[in-house]
Length: 287
View 1: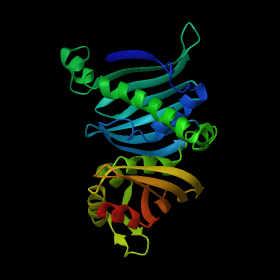
View 2 (view 1 turned 135 degrees about the horizontal axis):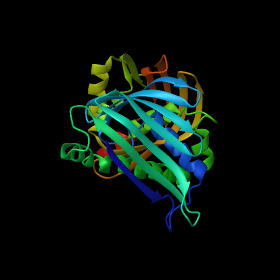
View 3 (view 1 turned 180 degrees about the horizontal axis):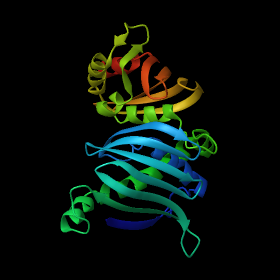
View 4 (view 1 turned 30 degrees about the vertical axis):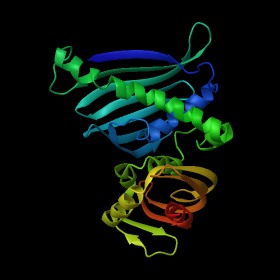
């Protein structure tokens, strides 16, 4: 079994100080949808939930794995690999050092089917993945700090259902949309997805939706949503936001947008209606 553990300080001079509760909110977000934080992960789908746990299917470097994630509130998140060729346990632990400074510890003990335990091959296999695992911890803290800086702690904590691991799925969706990575966006969509932009004809099906978003993303070098309001109930959500587009020429245009989303059985989105006037984006680009 390949074992590794590393502890980092949560807070650094000149950066916004995060509390234990802030860090916990970030760990919940990562557990529910790790795609924004782990570049080598191409799928993260929660398939079952219970009180204090969830089970998720992931693709890590195109390797399918199943994890049971257990939550010890404000203290530890445990990822037990229960399916696939890489088994074992990963832990994210919130603690304190001897001076009382808040810390975050990442540790794992993993095996790979077909590779002898304790061998050089095992060392080589997992050593190349260390950067991605530790990078996920760092990017989670950065995302939490950015949310606190831009939107405030109330919004950060409002995005997490109190006492559960149920992340605000609409936030996770728009985080993926803002990466401008079509594959991440498509992972949210059901085969029967219907996309509407204003009063334009509906775009039906994943293939057509992918073509439309590839064309749209090709005109941008950046995009970010700032939520203003959210009304949601189960698998239905309506969000009001201000979206800022960065054009290929470096110019930025911000405008209001209303989005209506619907999921099927708590999983894939089969309806995305976007109400926005894109004339300022493309009109400005032509002047």
